[in-house]
Amino acid sequence: MMLNSLRTQLTLWYTGVLALVLVSFAGATYAYLAHQARQRTDDSLADTANSFISSFITESEENQSSDAGALEAAHEFHFGDRLVVVYDESRRVVAASELPADVSTDHQWPGATSPAAASRLLDSATRSGRAYDSLPNNKAGLRAFAVALKIGARNYTVVVSRPLADQKEALRQARRAFYVAVPIALLIASLGGYFLARKNLRPVTTMGDQAALIGASNLNERLPVPHPNNELGRLAQIFNNLLAR
Image (cartoon, rainbow, N blue to C red):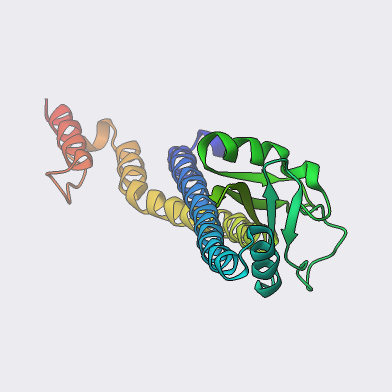
């Protein structure tokens, strides 16, 4: 049977080991890409929150009212893919920017459209001063960042959120690339491994055919030893020495 062929077994072993290496590499690469995408999103949300808080503080000083400052800062906030919501200490929505025009208003944005969605995030921000959380939304979900701050005598929590559709689409494309690249690489490698095994084992077949022709009438015949320093060459020398004895 073909599976009993040494070159087939070598090819299967080679392909199996390579498959393990490629799948491990693809998994590690995907995990790294996912981590980096999440990190970029978190850094972007933190930068947006810091920028908004600076505007919030400035507007509060100019308006002599922190609530009015929150409203003015939210009015001036213009991002096409994120929402800012300002909560007071009682978790009442003090101000919120306009919902992004290119995102469906059916999504459960924390704050203006779904205050309860951010309750866990607000609890974490209250305890630690700042917190990240992934919130339910549509299929992609939302990533949100909350910062607790005090302006005058009032305590506020600023929440910045953005949908993860772009991030998940990029990761989906990466998965597609792996689904195509890994099988193709395995196919090419297995074919190459089979032909290499066939080429490297050809001397064994030749030695076997020549050994089969040696009998009582031609014991003076010997196997050729083209490469005496490798394993096959030493095997041929041992067989020749056996014939000589």
